[in-house]
Length: 437
Image (tube, rainbow, N blue to C red):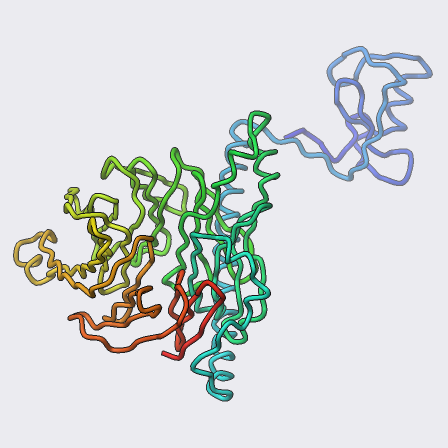
């Protein structure tokens, strides 16, 4: 602290801002009342500072517009400021998340009341194909249902940009861009060595919606993972990893943790507080991840890796997809003749408790007798398997023992689908078809 920072050290009176006794600084930085220091110079062009006796010039007097001058020691202050700013940012983000959650829950309640009052149609065919012509060009589109906003999230990719859109789940007409990245922007940020051919295959590689109903989703492209707020279309978090990211998953038991798999078989654990760790589970790309009962399942082309304290590989034919919910894990396997097999994984918790291990798994195989050459993302939900069968051009619903429960006939090649609260949204080559569940 500077002694007598609010008083002139010549006359010992306080400084003012409006008259001749405003604070004035010499070259050396010491402060005095303007009238007092000018009298000190006694009409000379230079004089010694009354405090430090350094020679100062009259023309370098500078008025200071402040009523009180306080100087602080700066030892370690920068680090403290940075730490406090980071803490402030975290608290602001948490506050925003909670406020958003409250708002979305209120909105969900209102929409649920509206749905019950108006009722819903079983099928709405091709209602907005003309408003989404780009989906015909994208061969690897993702669709997910976001419950809080009651919207369908859909990735897109065209000649200028790629990104994520949301479509109102009630009217399927209102469309907003949630996230978009233009190739020109990528070229500018990447530097002079970047060319357009570098971006021709750049698109979103995976998309997952939060299981905690907090209006967030995660997506990845290149080596970047982003967390998106689907309520206000903003980016909450962005992380760059060492390799190209190929898959994502939430931790169903910890909302602050997400998992990512990369092109070289590395599995990343990303804590939203900032900690990132990784372990190599295999040699090839991890195209699917799911965690259930504390066990991580990683799907690769050559098999499934189960990570529970140790890493164990289960050799299979060509694994095209791995998905799950909070009860089951469903694996899609293709043989050399393109015949599809589905494997439902059960973790025998009773045996695990008796053996003090969770390495006891039951693989239930289901053959539904159809072929598929492309990767399609089947789903498991509430002990039901939702399977795309493009030979029948339908989404087949089976129970966990393989019995048919329901069939959604589409009449078109199916590219993707997602499951809402009371609807299933099926994306075909001509648009969406919506069925009541």
